[in-house]
Amino acid sequence: MNEEERKCSYQCSECNKIAILGPKDAVRCVECGHRILYKIRSNQWTQYEAL
Image (tube, rainbow, N blue to C red; front, side):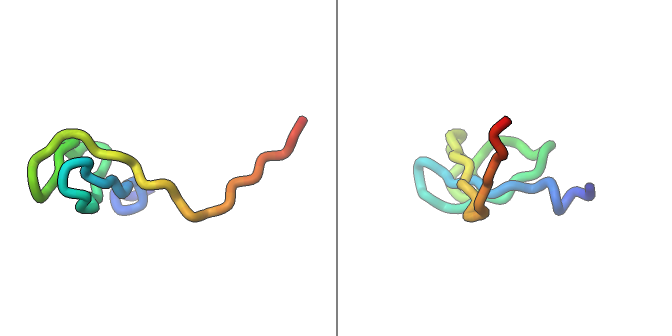
């Protein structure tokens, strides 16, 4: 897995901008510097098989 595949999208709680962060990036908004970010849910269906 390379660095690009491990990046996730987060939304800032202060300015609502989207920040794309990697595993070693600081948890901070790029626009305003706010430190509370929410992870964006994926649109992909997830189905689990019952055991």
